[in-house]
Each structure stands twice: as C-alpha cells, then as structure tokens.
Image (tube, rainbow over all chains, first blue to last red; front, side, top):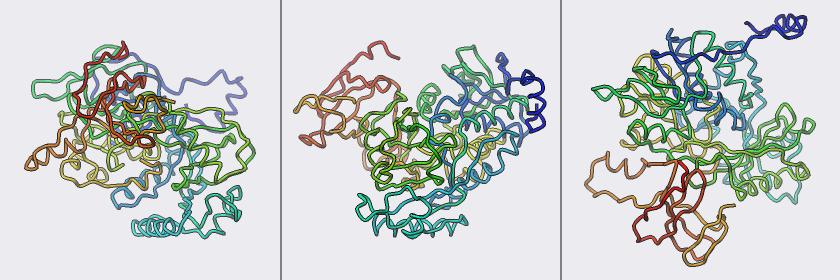
Length: 416
Length: 95
C-alpha cells in the first residue's frame, strides 16, 4: 500500500480499518540466495539495496529479537558528515545524500531535519583545531562554516554566554546539512520497502552457528528457528559482531562498550540545532516531541549489558548543565544504553572476512546511525558482486595488518 | 555504580579506576610477521561472558591489578595480581 495524503483520507473514511501491516512475518524458507544477520538499520538497508540495486530479492534478514531494537533504536538520531579524512568524508557524505532523498525513495517519512550541527570551541586551541577541521571538509567538497562567538550565541540562545560562564564559548563550526532523522522510521522504512521487493524479515530468529562446506565457505546459519541455507551471508550486528565472528571461527579488532543516552521531559521549542561540546562532553538536540535528547559517554570497559553506569550519566548531565544552565530543572524521563563496536581507528569495516562467502559490516562504534544508508549500500554491493564498493575499499579488515588506519577518533563525537 | 576491590585499598567506586583492557596478551617477537603484530595490537576475543582484564586504581594507590569480570552482568568473579595467571572461574550460570 502506497502512503499518501489521499491514502490517509481514505483511511479516515474507513475508520482506519483498512491499513495492512507494513511488512510480512513469513516462516523461514529452507534456503535463500543471501542471508543478512542483524535486523537493524544497516542490515535492513543492505537487504533493501540488494533487491533495489542488484535485483536479488531471494534474501532473508534474520534478527534475534525485534526489528530495530538494538542501536538503531538507541542512538541520538544525529546525521552529519563532518569527518576529517577524504576516505571517510566520501563515505559519510554519500550516506547523508542518500538520507536527503530517503523519505521519497522509501515512501516513508523518516522526518529528516537538517537543522544544522554545531560544534563548540571553548579555547584558542579548540578554535584552531575546528578551523583545520572545517578546511579539511572544504578540501573534501563538504560545506562547513566557522562561527564567531557572537554567531554561536545568536544561533543557540539557550547557551550560557555570560561572562561568568563555567566554560566560555569562543566560537564554533557548523555543518548546515547536519541534523536529525527519526531513527525508528529509518528501520521501519527500509523494512517495509525491502519486504515489498520480496525480502523475508525473520524476527525472533537468533543465529546460533554457521555451517560450512568442504572448502571452508559458509553454507548457511543454524538459528533458533532451524537451519537456513545460503552461500553468501552478511553480518550487520554492531556490538554483537565479535560474538558472531567467534561462532564463525575468527576474531575482530573490536571491543564492545555501552554507550548511553537519555531524554528529558518535553518542553516548548528551545533548541533548533544539534549542539556538541567535545571539551565538556555535552551532546544535545531537541526532539520533535520537545524532549532534550542527550548523548552520553562510553563506559570505558567491555560490556554487553545495554545499560550505562551512573558515573557516566552524572558527568554527561553535569557537562550539559554547565553549558545550558537553564535546563537544570528538567527531569530525565528515560536513560538507556546500546552496545557499540569500537575499533582502534573509529572507522568501519565493510567487506570480506577470513571465511569464504561471509561478509561483515561493523566497527561504526559510536556513530553508526548516520551511516545506515551507506553501510547498507556498500554491504549489498560486496554481497551481490563479490567485489568491494569503491567507497568501502579503504575500510577493509586488512588495514589492521598493513597499518593503513583511518583515525577518525576526533570526528566520532564521543571521547574514546 | 559498579564497585571494584583494589587488592591494596579495598572496595571503591568504579569512578576511581581506569580499565586497561584485556590482560594476558603476550607481546610477539620483534621479528614476528605483520599478521602476528596486527593480532597482538588490535584483534581481541571481546567475549560476551568472563573477561580477564587489567584495571588501575588511578585515583587511589595508582597500582595495577587484574580482575575476571562477566561482561553481561558486570559481576566481578576474581581479583588477582598482575603477575598471577588467570584463575579458573565459573560464570555463575549466565551464558
């Protein structure tokens, strides 16, 4: 069913009893051409682009819990492409451009709001590094604007710009095309569009092992709903990538950490930019519902627990209140964590694994949401053709042997 | 908040400590292959389960020590010194 104003009107006249589910819940077939492990944004996008770009629709997405219930539903919904190195800039800006056309392409409103993403400078050294960063972005053909102290104050009236401010703001830089998108809608939109093209989405279907043939290549997955055969399998499982890699018999340069986020009670429109202050650790935007969405820090020890520690929550809230003192009487409504797959250079891994036929998309760490369209596109490409997409070429597992790292620690937004 | 038991100072809040990552990783021979050095520097087991790891009591005595901790429950199953081998521990029934 195509969604439109007319469809809504028809629904209203039929007392909204005419809507069908956005995707099917089929029984698993015995075999597929390709299986994607992980029903989050990246996995669903990969399934959609396999069908859309490569005409391969005999595809299953297997998800151990419910669709979009991992990091896709746990992030702070920020999209941006303000990265430092050319390889990353190309990949993340490709992603942002896909986001810009995604609501129309998927016929599903992802509520993309390019409200501008502002990074604050609190010292002369911050100003110098932001200038270098903005110049690097210009070199890569991505717009970025340096802001004076006064411009920052005008764009973010809630910011403490008083002479007594605990952390004085000296300036900043802005990517105007950065902003937010509705995270659940990205997962649901890709799921609905992939389903319409014939992809089977199998929830409550946990991968318990991989089966291999005589040459050591994959022949399928053993799941909680039985064996499903496929000669090509893609893993898009973020913080659980190492668990799946162990089942398949190899290791990854990944450590899983809990990254927390939180929202306050809703209030009237107060903040119409995404604001990050790397020096203090504050990362805030206001949702369309009015909640202040606050990005947390990492608990810097390995964890699969999907809950953050109080110590980190306290420091994040303290940092936020230091630059936005007027938020001090807001109550936090919810706090949660997702398990992120951090690699040493804060750049992704998209490509082949040591197991023939098995491919992986992981390593996005604290910033995977913004990369969903590009991660899905490039994983679909390598699954369909057996060759790396040119954007994914620099992001192979071999770089941890050759030493050709792409260190984006500064651009990842969250201190590691 | 998690509490850790420093072998010298006793139980303290997690915020006094800094985690130094996985323990018991042996440095390869300087002449070892790039593959071995890459494995040593970057590749990790990253288990969901018992993890043997180093911590430093950074805002206390400053000393390093090892613990065995479950990465799903965060339960600390053993505390031992830097030079001791990893102890045999039970995961208390949690997968």
